[in-house]
Image (cartoon, rainbow, N blue to C red; front, side, top):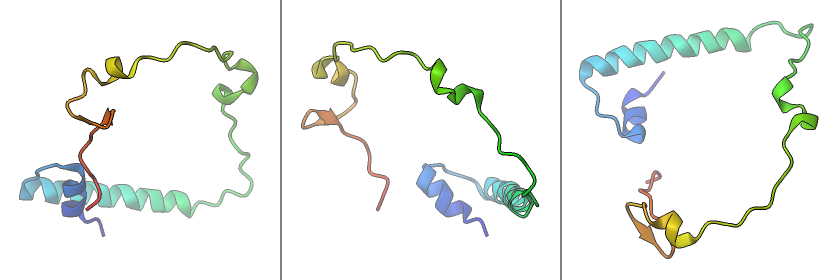
Length: 91
């Protein structure tokens, strides 16, 4: 069962009761669809090959000068000890 309230809290979404019902139904159907994929009989299916991951076509590594920390942190809403300060996501 999809716990839409927990998902909304973790995502920092405020949902109405109607939205909760709608998204619960939609996500439940989505998960049911994934269940069908998991149960699919695939032993004779050849593994897919992703042309993008062909190592011979990757660009050459180039050494560049690092950016200054002050410039990187200039637009940070909050910073602490020379690093970005972000809201916690785990309670």
